[in-house]
Length: 433
Image (cartoon, rainbow, N blue to C red):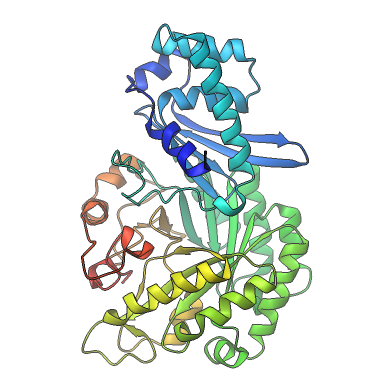
């Protein structure tokens, strides 16, 4: 049985359950739980978020995320806490009543194998696209985000934000480092995130991050992944839009990250100069041992001079080429929402600034606490520092965002692209403005 089939059976094949009430009987409260699991020579880092409705979201490092029914929450939590099987069976019976012992043993073995495979996903990564309705007819929408993108700033400004992310149950933070950030800030913020138990990532230019002992210091602080802007395999294209010599610095940073056991991720913006050669770029990265890429477009609306950005109608063709090239190069990739280009903006500035969010399972949190959704106008949905998550989620900004994601934006004109799972790439309403 393939991992995808096993997940489909386990996540959505269990019988209906009373959810929150069942977990209460088992003594499991909503919240975020953090575990390390030893699987031979490899130690995996797991976060289990138990939502108020009884469902659980299990994340493994910064690579995989799967939904668990309440019954699955009990099995996973028990195994991650090294409870004896008899205790786990007792909790299942307390929650759901009499269950045949053979069924309990079979399901426990299945979940144990599932944890092993999640910890070593191999070619099955990514396990699941939480926003893809093709995964199951029974769609479970995120009660709250999986991660947050936060512009790097002084540690004392970001510490309360990191604490609120943990309290809310958002286990993953990615810092966006601008050209003017102090390297010492980055190390201290990563330390703060790791002390709380958060997964910590960092996004920036190679010329910023590959200086002195910064990468070694970040690795020692506990950095989990390094996201580097990488426009193309051609240094002339990359350096034209970033800074002279940044291409070489990016390659050195990617190599250093691998040696330091920091997961390297390249972020490739699609513009007129980069998308035609995406096949060469991905193949070259694969040859260097870099297998993770995040791709997003700088898009321009009809009737506006592009300045090098991609017209909306061209995004589908470009996206198809990206997905075909990634498959050929055997590079794992993830789509970030397109960023809208406006007249009067510098394309180079947009490229260096990067995406608003790391996909549709993320939010943007500004250093003042303002929360922005992954797509649409740059309007605040509330303050992470002052408002409850429930109030933020009920805001008109977040409601409009969720309604758009839940609407069917697929059309018969396109070839079933992954990018279309969350929103139509040609629609300006689905761009980060």
